[in-house]
Length: 572
Image 1 (cartoon, helix red, strand yellow):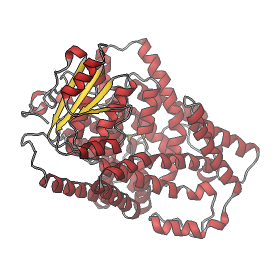
Image 2 (cartoon, one colour):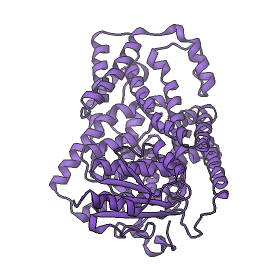
Image 3 (cartoon, helix red, strand yellow):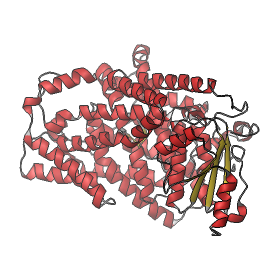
Image 4 (cartoon, one colour):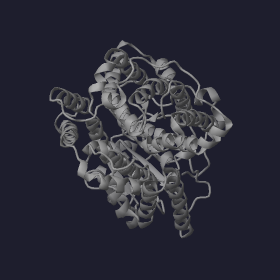
C-alpha cells in the first residue's frame, strides 16, 4: 500500500541473510548468563507443558505415546536451532491429529513415517523457493474455520477415552460413522474414567483462572495418575495399553522406501507440508505479536522441513510450530531459541530418568487435556466477529468448517481460499478506488534491513509525540500481513498513534483482525490509538472485531485527531 512500488527485498538481500537462523542473530546481539537463565526457566516451563501434551497428541493420532516425545525432542530441538523465529516451539500439534491418524490407518506406521519425511522435503523446497510469503495470503475466516473444524474432530476423537467406552465396533476415522459408533456404545460408560476426565478439565480451568503461572496440565495429569494408582481404579493407562515408554531415543534409521509406497503416501505428505507451513507461520506471527519481533517465514519453513526429516529418522511424527507452547515460552520470559532447545533436552532427560512413571498416566486424563485444547481451538469470539462483520466472510468460514469436519482438511483449506478469492474479486469489481501499484505482499528481509517505510505514509504530529500512518488502497487478506508487520512496533516510537483509513475503500475480516491486534497492543502499553477517515462500513467492520470503546477513538480526519490532542494538552 503505497504511492510507489517498493524495492524487491529479494533483489537486495542475499541468501545468507534471509536464511540465517535466529539463533545466530541472538548470539550476534550479545548473549550472556542472564539471557541463559531466562531461557532455562522458559525451557523448563514449556517442557512441563509439552511432556504430557506430546504423549496425548500421539495417542490421539493413533500411535504410541513415545512417538510424541521423540517428535518434541528431535523436531523441537531442530526447529529452535535452525528456525527463523526467536520464540517458536516445535513439536507434535493437535492440528495434525486428524491427518496423522488417517495416514496411519491407511498406510501403517512405516507409511506415516515416510510421509513425514517427504513432507519435510516439500517444506525445504517451499522455504528455499521463498514461497512461504504466499502462505500469508490465506484469509482469516479460512484460518478460523479450519482451526474450529480440527477442534471438533479432536473432541470427537477423545470421547471414547473421556468416557471409558467399550466400543461395539472398530472406531472409524470419518466423522459421521465415528459419532454413530460412539452413540451406539454409550451404554458402556466407565464412571471412574469420567471422574478422572472431569477432574483433569476442572484442574486445568481452575489453574488458568486462579493460578495462571502454574503448570495446570502437569498438575492435573499427576494428580489423576496418583488417584488412579492408589485407588486401583478400573481405567486404562499408558502402561496397560502401550506397555509404557522407552527410556532413550531409538537408533535413527531411514523409513522403508519404494516408489510405489512413496506414490501412495504422496497426498498425505503434501497435506502434512501444507498444514505444517500454515500452522508454523501462524504460530510465528502470534509470537511476533506478543514480542514486537519479526520472524523470517522462509527460514522458518526450512527449519520445519529439517525437523520433520529428523523426526522421521527417529520414528517421530509430524513437527510444526505450536501456538500454545510458543505463547507459553514467550510468557515465561524466553530471550531466544536456546529456550526451545533446552525444552527438548529437558523432555529427553525425563525419558531417561522417569520413563517408568509414564505407565501410570490414565488415558482418561490425557483425553481431558485434549478436550480442553479442542475447546480452545474453536475461537468463539473470532467466529462471532466474522459473523457480525461480513456475510461473505461468514460463508467462507462455515464452508471451510463443514468441509474440514465432514470431508477433508486439505479440501476445506483449498475450497475456503478459493471461495475467499472469488468473494474478494467480486468486491473489488464493485470498487473503483484501487491503486494499480499496491503490492500484495512483502518478502522476508534480513534483520539488518530497516522497517519498510514505503507502505504507509508517516510523519505528521511529531510535535505532539504522535505518529500518523496513512493506509491507501484495498486492505484485505493479501496485504494484511504486510501492514501488520509495519504496525508491529508502533508503540515503541510514539505515545499517540493515528491510523488514517480515508483512502481505504474496503477492508475484510483479516485486515480488521490486524488492526484489532494493533489497537489492543497499543492499549496494553499505554499508547492512545486513533482511527481516522473510516467510512461507516469500515467502522462497522472494525467495531464488530472489537476495535472501539477504550481501545480506539474514531475521528473524521487526521487534523481533528491532532486538534483533539492539542486541546487536551497531551504533551507526554
